[in-house]
Length: 321
Image (cartoon, rainbow, N blue to C red):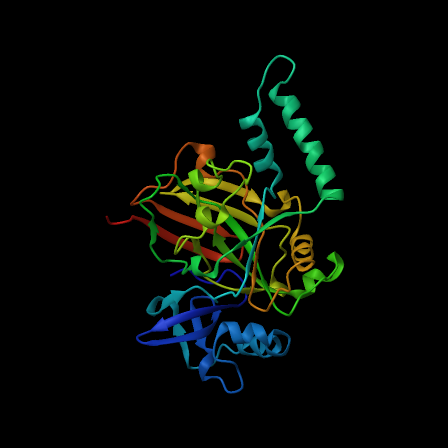
């Protein structure tokens, strides 16, 4: 069982028939449902984030309590169940440049170097003047950080996309970029699995993307293991690393994002009233399976880590006929 990579974090655990919120410090957790005055779930804690955070800090500093539990003795669930999930696409410079080169018609007048330079210039304009590309995911796709992922039998083109997710900590509607970060309670890890051949409607190309079919199969959003408070995280300087069967596939810094967390939260809030516990996904860096020419198969093990947020490990299982 992975330890928390920050001074403390929150998780949801199961022991027998009991599921409970836990305060995670190192390789131990404190059952918060036994602490008087605290809500009984991570979702409820996030609903009362501003009031509860000081108490969590006090508890994390009290290492002398006798009722800490060892993580290795517990099952780890997704840290919380969001009501809404907002996702960002095409939000990492290197990823977008690689895609532009992959789909460009190269020649003597249009070299790879020229395509890369033009795409980089376009992204600079977009970051300065444009808006993020956002769409919605479904809560039913959320799974635990160590759960098996069933690969649906209707396709053989399932892919990985490691992402940083911001967890909203208060009702957020039409906030500006300067104040948006104050609405983030914490951060967690997600792997936004995608079925590539369903991402675009070939029968109706004028309609464009079909993220419902491509991204929302049960278990297609492994989440966690922990929710780490935003006070302990610099979202602009985190390393995302994904391994497939111990081979590194993604390894990038959040510094490569076109729109930072505050910009994404602000943009989403212009249309949607974000609620405590909602997730705002920040996009995936370069290195997905389509880039490597290697998509997910039954038996694959995906290990995903983000600096200070822990590690999730999921095994892929083919769907039974």
